[in-house]
Length: 170
Image 1 (cartoon, rainbow, N blue to C red):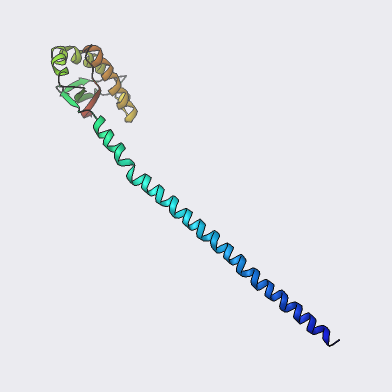
Image 2: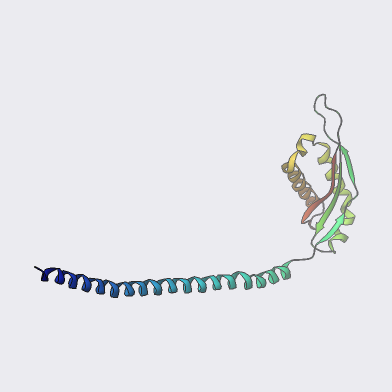
Protein backbone atom coordinates (compact mmCIF):
# COMPACT_ATOMS: atom_id res chain seq x y z
CA UNK A 1 0.00 0.00 0.00
CA UNK A 2 2.87 2.25 0.44
CA UNK A 3 3.55 1.96 -3.24
CA UNK A 4 0.16 3.22 -4.24
CA UNK A 5 0.70 6.83 -3.20
CA UNK A 6 3.91 6.88 -5.20
CA UNK A 7 2.02 5.70 -8.29
CA UNK A 8 -0.52 8.39 -7.80
CA UNK A 9 2.24 10.93 -7.40
CA UNK A 10 3.80 9.72 -10.65
CA UNK A 11 0.43 10.01 -12.40
CA UNK A 12 -0.05 13.51 -11.02
CA UNK A 13 3.44 14.48 -12.14
CA UNK A 14 2.75 13.10 -15.61
CA UNK A 15 -0.53 14.99 -15.82
CA UNK A 16 1.18 18.15 -14.57
CA UNK A 17 3.85 17.85 -17.25
CA UNK A 18 1.19 17.25 -19.93
CA UNK A 19 -0.72 20.35 -18.74
CA UNK A 20 2.48 22.39 -18.79
CA UNK A 21 3.16 21.29 -22.37
CA UNK A 22 -0.45 21.99 -23.44
CA UNK A 23 -0.41 25.42 -21.80
CA UNK A 24 2.45 26.74 -23.93
CA UNK A 25 0.76 25.40 -27.07
CA UNK A 26 -2.49 27.17 -26.15
CA UNK A 27 -0.70 30.39 -25.18
CA UNK A 28 1.32 30.35 -28.42
CA UNK A 29 -1.88 29.87 -30.40
CA UNK A 30 -3.54 32.78 -28.57
CA UNK A 31 -0.45 34.91 -29.13
CA UNK A 32 -0.49 34.24 -32.88
CA UNK A 33 -4.21 35.07 -33.06
CA UNK A 34 -3.73 38.34 -31.15
CA UNK A 35 -0.73 39.36 -33.28
CA UNK A 36 -2.61 38.48 -36.48
CA UNK A 37 -5.65 40.49 -35.40
CA UNK A 38 -3.46 43.47 -34.46
CA UNK A 39 -1.70 43.38 -37.83
CA UNK A 40 -5.02 43.13 -39.65
CA UNK A 41 -6.35 46.16 -37.74
CA UNK A 42 -3.19 48.15 -38.54
CA UNK A 43 -3.43 47.32 -42.23
CA UNK A 44 -7.13 48.18 -42.41
CA UNK A 45 -6.62 51.38 -40.41
CA UNK A 46 -3.75 52.46 -42.64
CA UNK A 47 -5.77 51.77 -45.78
CA UNK A 48 -8.74 53.71 -44.45
CA UNK A 49 -6.53 56.65 -43.43
CA UNK A 50 -4.91 56.72 -46.88
CA UNK A 51 -8.31 56.61 -48.57
CA UNK A 52 -9.78 59.45 -46.52
CA UNK A 53 -6.72 61.67 -46.53
CA UNK A 54 -5.52 61.36 -50.11
CA UNK A 55 -8.52 60.47 -52.23
CA UNK A 56 -10.55 63.61 -51.37
CA UNK A 57 -8.07 66.07 -52.86
CA UNK A 58 -8.74 64.97 -56.45
CA UNK A 59 -12.48 65.34 -55.96
CA UNK A 60 -12.08 68.81 -54.46
CA UNK A 61 -9.91 69.92 -57.38
CA UNK A 62 -12.46 68.66 -59.90
CA UNK A 63 -15.30 70.41 -58.03
CA UNK A 64 -13.37 73.69 -58.07
CA UNK A 65 -12.77 73.28 -61.79
CA UNK A 66 -16.51 72.71 -62.37
CA UNK A 67 -17.67 75.81 -60.47
CA UNK A 68 -18.68 78.50 -62.90
CA UNK A 69 -18.12 82.13 -62.06
CA UNK A 70 -21.27 83.96 -60.98
CA UNK A 71 -22.29 87.38 -62.24
CA UNK A 72 -24.71 89.65 -60.45
CA UNK A 73 -27.03 92.38 -61.65
CA UNK A 74 -28.30 94.74 -58.95
CA UNK A 75 -31.84 96.06 -59.17
CA UNK A 76 -33.01 99.37 -57.78
CA UNK A 77 -34.50 99.17 -54.25
CA UNK A 78 -38.20 98.30 -54.27
CA UNK A 79 -40.64 99.69 -51.67
CA UNK A 80 -44.32 98.69 -51.68
CA UNK A 81 -47.36 98.78 -49.41
CA UNK A 82 -48.38 95.31 -48.32
CA UNK A 83 -52.00 94.20 -48.57
CA UNK A 84 -54.02 95.03 -45.44
CA UNK A 85 -56.69 92.74 -43.99
CA UNK A 86 -59.29 94.22 -41.64
CA UNK A 87 -58.08 96.70 -39.05
CA UNK A 88 -54.36 96.05 -39.55
CA UNK A 89 -51.98 98.94 -39.81
CA UNK A 90 -50.47 99.71 -43.19
CA UNK A 91 -47.17 97.89 -43.59
CA UNK A 92 -44.36 98.49 -46.03
CA UNK A 93 -41.93 96.11 -47.65
CA UNK A 94 -38.51 97.26 -48.80
CA UNK A 95 -36.36 94.91 -50.90
CA UNK A 96 -32.90 95.29 -52.34
CA UNK A 97 -32.40 92.47 -54.83
CA UNK A 98 -29.51 91.17 -56.90
CA UNK A 99 -30.05 88.81 -59.82
CA UNK A 100 -27.55 85.98 -60.29
CA UNK A 101 -27.00 85.45 -64.02
CA UNK A 102 -24.94 82.82 -65.86
CA UNK A 103 -22.72 85.29 -67.75
CA UNK A 104 -22.15 88.98 -68.33
CA UNK A 105 -23.68 88.85 -71.80
CA UNK A 106 -27.12 88.44 -70.15
CA UNK A 107 -26.90 92.01 -68.86
CA UNK A 108 -27.40 93.28 -72.43
CA UNK A 109 -30.60 91.21 -72.66
CA UNK A 110 -31.90 92.10 -69.18
CA UNK A 111 -31.40 95.88 -69.20
CA UNK A 112 -33.93 96.71 -71.96
CA UNK A 113 -36.51 94.50 -70.18
CA UNK A 114 -35.95 95.78 -66.66
CA UNK A 115 -39.25 97.73 -66.74
CA UNK A 116 -41.10 94.42 -67.22
CA UNK A 117 -39.22 92.92 -64.27
CA UNK A 118 -40.09 95.85 -62.00
CA UNK A 119 -43.75 95.73 -63.07
CA UNK A 120 -43.96 91.98 -62.40
CA UNK A 121 -42.40 92.48 -58.98
CA UNK A 122 -44.67 95.41 -58.05
CA UNK A 123 -47.88 93.59 -59.02
CA UNK A 124 -46.92 90.49 -57.04
CA UNK A 125 -45.53 92.28 -53.98
CA UNK A 126 -48.58 94.52 -53.51
CA UNK A 127 -50.77 91.44 -53.05
CA UNK A 128 -48.63 90.04 -50.24
CA UNK A 129 -49.57 90.31 -46.58
CA UNK A 130 -47.06 90.60 -43.77
CA UNK A 131 -48.02 87.08 -42.65
CA UNK A 132 -46.93 85.73 -46.07
CA UNK A 133 -43.37 86.81 -45.30
CA UNK A 134 -43.03 85.24 -41.85
CA UNK A 135 -40.29 82.72 -41.29
CA UNK A 136 -37.74 81.25 -43.63
CA UNK A 137 -40.42 79.36 -45.57
CA UNK A 138 -42.16 82.66 -46.42
CA UNK A 139 -38.91 84.21 -47.63
CA UNK A 140 -38.10 81.09 -49.67
CA UNK A 141 -41.54 81.22 -51.36
CA UNK A 142 -41.00 84.92 -52.10
CA UNK A 143 -37.59 84.20 -53.62
CA UNK A 144 -38.89 81.40 -55.84
CA UNK A 145 -41.91 83.41 -57.02
CA UNK A 146 -39.76 86.43 -57.88
CA UNK A 147 -37.32 84.20 -59.78
CA UNK A 148 -40.19 82.69 -61.75
CA UNK A 149 -41.58 86.14 -62.59
CA UNK A 150 -38.24 87.62 -63.63
CA UNK A 151 -37.55 84.63 -65.91
CA UNK A 152 -40.94 85.15 -67.58
CA UNK A 153 -40.23 88.86 -68.04
CA UNK A 154 -36.76 88.47 -69.58
CA UNK A 155 -37.32 85.30 -71.60
CA UNK A 156 -35.33 83.82 -73.49
CA UNK A 157 -32.65 84.93 -71.01
CA UNK A 158 -32.78 83.43 -67.56
CA UNK A 159 -31.81 84.20 -63.99
CA UNK A 160 -30.22 81.44 -61.91
CA UNK A 161 -31.11 82.88 -58.51
CA UNK A 162 -32.56 85.83 -56.66
CA UNK A 163 -30.38 87.19 -53.86
CA UNK A 164 -31.84 89.43 -51.17
CA UNK A 165 -29.45 92.09 -50.02
CA UNK A 166 -32.04 93.64 -47.73
CA UNK A 167 -35.57 92.72 -46.65
CA UNK A 168 -37.43 95.11 -44.41
CA UNK A 169 -41.07 94.76 -43.32
CA UNK A 170 -42.27 97.74 -41.32
